[in-house]
Length: 120
Image (cartoon, rainbow, N blue to C red; front, side, top):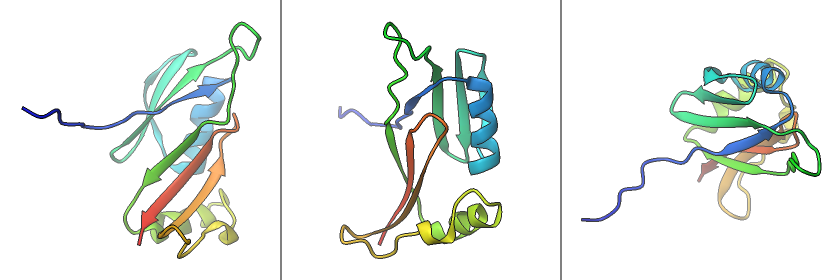
């Protein structure tokens, strides 16, 4: 019997869970599934991300710089909704990249890069 891979849930570092929950909701349309001040789960349709608090000290570094690439079909409606609500500039959509995608990205409040990618 072969292993079936079901899903992946990236866990992104956060300095402030409440602030970041608000940002993901207002900026990208995610909603809170569960959580407290230390750890939370958010969802947008079938996508799930987790946020984990870090103190940003030498003993508990925030790090940042994580990158999440979210694969989508029909990227334009979601991108246009983010442009309309002011979350991203219209110039951010890259069409027909040399690697065969349409995509756009932005940074969250902890400097994690979030990319939405459509294979063409």
